[in-house]
Image 1: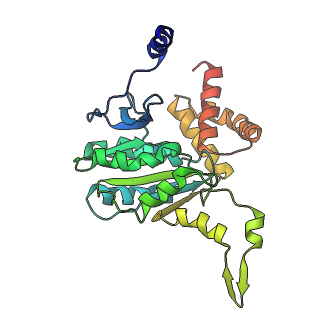
Image 2: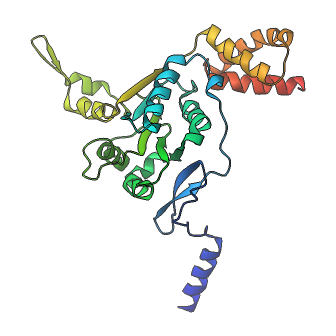
Image 3: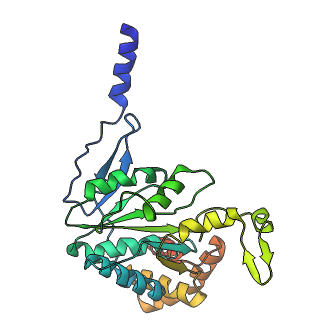
Length: 282
């Protein structure tokens, strides 16, 4: 018995402290963190929020305009939609959400990051912020599910059909590389029925579509053209202080970088700029 208590004592010394259940409401953003020891979650303030300006996000003007309009409706207390942003990786989906916080934090906008594995805790998060004067976006980044995951059912319930309604000071914004948030298989398409001129998708496909349809606003992001990619590279190089001649000199190197990465995206453009400026000793 004494030996067991000694072992427990040593374990408690190395485990992280229990999370406080009273959030720091002076913060602009939080992460929902679940304590592995107790199984309970808490809002943990993000000590330093990365500041991104909306104007710095280039070549996604349509997506930016629509999400800004939806967010302004939300901040004004008017009806607004939960939003799902899907498409190519590194094209500004999550950066756009962070830029909203930079722009609208003074108007009361706040962000809570929730991992997909913790979506079952959304009712608990909602209970914490219900009645608060701030306007909260529950942000789920890189959202995707495999069949049978608990978070899938929990998110469906929150978005539509839950007995406990989400308050009007909460919206859900999510990003994903998949339009329907779950993997799709050829065998499922084989079960699709054709009745005359009508097409009836198989039940498995209908189930996968049903979650994404619960988001009222869909925004699609596409791979950048070469011109758009170079515009973003030039913007980053200018941000780091390079002159026009130096930026022109980097053009072919930027294209080679994109070929090597197999992608032209805002993320790849920023990574090239960091590497190039670092090598030039700027």
